[in-house]
Length: 299
Image (tube, rainbow, N blue to C red; front, side, top):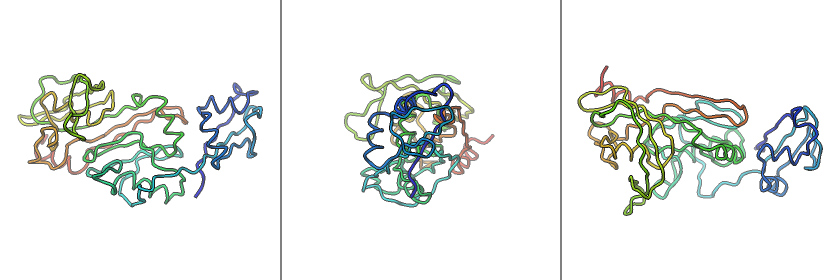
């Protein structure tokens, strides 16, 4: 297993500063430095271990070798199928099938994307635990963003998850009055449920944008974009306006024609903290939703 490393090339603008200040500029915190120093990490300049008081010069190569991450003993290494849409040294974008939870829970201690990611990391020799940046509900399919290291995850969190744009496709019951709009309604946990959420005045701010792609007398096909990322946000908001997701019986949808909620994360856009540019990935409907559409909403 190889340790996880990140490296930077010192620019002319950073020439002459101390290594300590360079690392701080690149978001290596004091706590992270302490972990690196005392838990098996290394800081190298041009391949040699250096102290943080080292003065840097233009084109020096600064490499940080992070300590091995310890994962929970409850997280079982388990093969779980998912497609990798994109991968580099820092992130993964995967296509999650429906029916697989993102993380373990009391109801699903195994068989999750997190179990499968740990298995994949073992296969490629990556000494990291699982850092899911954008989760999906068990029966939601589509794109998920994964950080390959705690530090990378920290950078996404620092920049604000609202800067990660997520778009969804969905089938709902009925015809919406407006062809597009914004649902701005706070969401909180329902008093009598550990799982279910609802729109409530004391909830957290939640904003969902919607656009009608097509409709017939029974169903509407929607494109949705999250402005916030509350638990069950799209499901709760659509139920709140009277147009529950097809297949989402928790929030009022019928399972007569579809046995899972008809929600698919088809696009994700994010600013890459190391490549310093925006990435956009899109995928089409999975086969089960495409088949449902061809039967119930033919062109």
